[in-house]
Length: 135
Image (cartoon, rainbow, N blue to C red; front, side, top):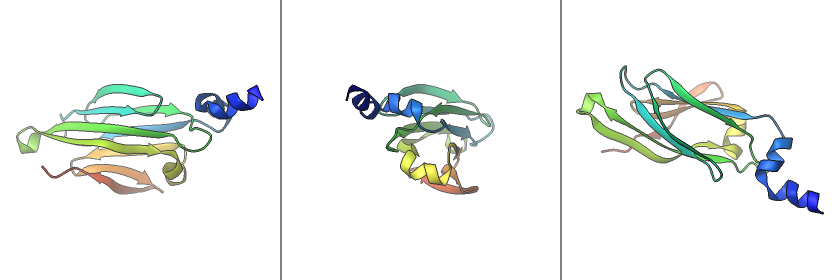
């Protein structure tokens, strides 16, 4: 009985035993010389704030929980050099949701931050998922 409670009651324990790790990449494809800032977190993990230079990225890996409820929400912001350095930001972007992404990208999920929004690589095609809010 205790073993069943531990296995089902704790996602970090159950995820150690089921399935491969998932890796998410978030790439800066804005403008040369333009850094972006990324802050991602899940229910259990806060990945901190990362400054990402143009044409580079940040990635992390994890085990999805047993019930496919893993979700990473990110805030992304940058200063637009073509608009007087104006702040552009997106908040609470669902960068990874296991029940959606396990079929769309498997265990290797690529995100691309571009001047018009955040794109996901879905079934080997780029899809604009989050356009930047109108300022």
